Length: 287
Ligand SMILES: [Zn+2]
Image 1 (cartoon, rainbow, N blue to C red):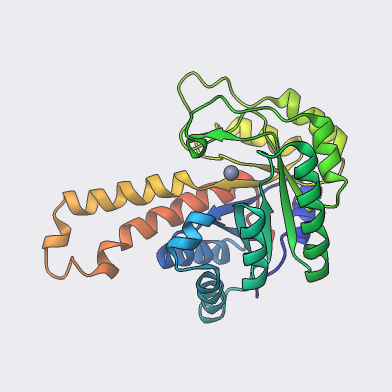
Image 2 (cartoon, rainbow, N blue to C red):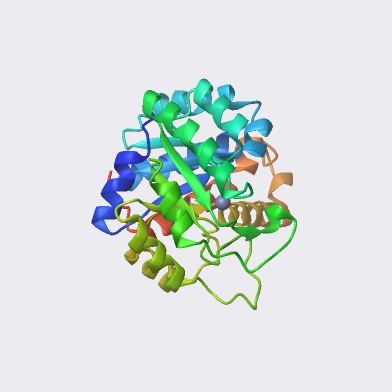
C-alpha cells in the first residue's frame, strides 16, 4: 500500500535519521529500489519527476506499476510515491492519478505567488491525506541550464512557507542537482541551522544527494534533514554496470542479449547504491 510520507518523516526527524527518496525511471529501477527497501526493512520514497512521468507513459501508468509491484513482490515497508519538482498542474494530475505525496516547486515564483499556490495545495493534500513538499531558495544544477553553486534559502521565507502547513520543506543550502563541480564550497550548515531553528519540527529535505561527502550528509541529518533525494547516483551506477557488461562482450555470448540478462548488472548496481545510501542515512530497520 502506498502511504503519505508524513509519518515516516516525522519518525525520521525525531529519530535523527533520514529517509531516502530514490527517483525511478522504469520498471527495473522501481523493482530494484522496492526490493532493497524490503530487504533492509527501510521506509522508502519513490521520486518521479515530470519528465520521468511522461517517459513512463503518464502518472496513472506509474501508479499502476508501483501498486502492482508492492502487491506482487510482497512489499510491506512504508512506500510513498512522490512527485519530484512538480509544477502546480503536475501536482494536481498526480493527486488525481493516486500518488501519495507531491512536491510543488514554487521556488522560481515570487514569494507571494509561491505562498498562494502552496496554500491551495495544502488544502487539497490535507483533504486527501497526502504529504506535500515545498521548496524555498532554488536548488542549483543542470536542471536550470546552468551549473551554479546553489542558492541559500532565506530562513524567514522558509518559516513563512512552513507555517502554511506543508509536510516537509526543501531549503537550498548550497546543494546542487547532478554532479558537484570540483570547486563546490560545500553545504552551508549556517543556513541549515538557521532554517532548522525557524521551522522547528518540520522535516527538511536535502536535494542533490549525489556526491555530497558522507560526513556532510551526517551533519545535515543532525541539523534536521530527514529526507534526502538521490537520483544521479543510481543513474551513474546503472550506466557503468551496463557499460561493463557490453564492453566485456557478454551480450554476444549465448542469450546475453536477452533484456532480462542485459539489464541485470545495472539493477544490481542500483540495489547496491540504494543499500549504501540507506545505511548512510540511518533508515535501515526503521520501517
Ligand atoms: Zn531536487
